[in-house]
Length: 432
Ligand code: AMP
Ligand code: GLY
Image 1 (cartoon, helix red, strand yellow):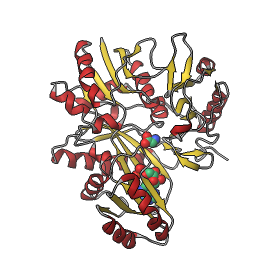
Image 2: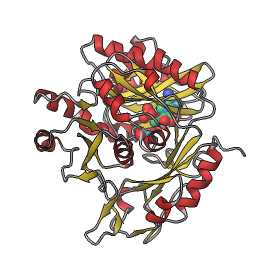
Image 3: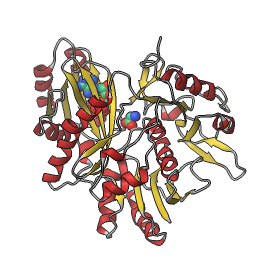
Image 4: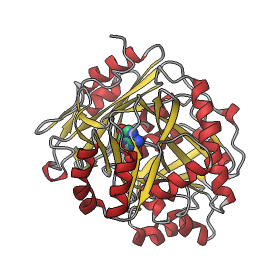
């Protein structure tokens, strides 16, 4: 009997729990707090919001009482608040995710920039600035005729990056950036090229990557227009990044960073997410995140054939083996169904009835992962956030088929008051 607990409530967490529940040895998947779609079968929700450090003791009590074998932390917030340190201090070591100090790889862009540079890993030339004066100097120093990038130092939920076309644009944006995110700014050279993500599992000594790359769609509207969001859809594999390039990135850009962290006394066990850009000089790191991507996790879990529970156990034991990872053939596509108004949180209405999930889930090779949903006492599912569902498909043959199937399934689902979604997820990969 093996019990696992997933901390978090989004589509990423639903996908992780779904994949873990496929393992015959796993008998219970407990979500804290989960969402309207995560309970059922082997899976159940407990009403503990793990994003609040004040709830870490309650969660640790539950883990002890239920004799939970493995805890997986989904979002970066609790990791950078020290959830892993808290559990470790209570003598519990089967929690998967980096410690607070190691989470600085995502939570502190100055630290991350320093570490990546120390390891000789390709990234944008950047200058950490702690005052308005030094930021102005850095903008003058690093601006080219192709622009410049301003990045907030801390966690900003994906919003703290301003990509500027010109030096004048950067200077004009500076005071907004400053008042929104404070004086600590990483000024970075602007890079160009297609973006993709590589996901790996670190066992403290090395990173074993998922052998394929994924692409997110961060903008709200078709054709990559509109404001940035948490992600409106994702697919994989990315056709222009082959397995050899993914392994090259893991071996020469991810593992060295993990080794360096170990030397510094910050052993890193957990998922590692490398946001990459394929520049004319080759792949460069844009950022590291200390978690799985959301929604990239949904297609990644769909493509993974081997046993995630075993991989995580091996990582916790420091003996992960690349040869144990297996994948399904073909491709996976995830389309996010969002509430009208998203990403403007003031415009999102909660409590709108959702219909058609069962019909979509009844289709072959379709799985609807829940994110911002809630199940009412009468069994109805209602909206409970901005990104509501991730309609995820698998095709054993092609991304074209996975995409077509996803849109067929999306058409079966409606929200009272309307639904919004992009109609072009995976356009980069689908044959024109
Ligand atoms: P980050 O939060 O660092 O991933 O940045 C968010 C987004 O900003 C990335 O996905 C890129 O689209 C863009 N970005 C960040 N850094 C750079 C850079 N140095 N050059 C061009 N675009 C960038
Ligand atoms: N999909 C982007 C992220 O998880 O940050």
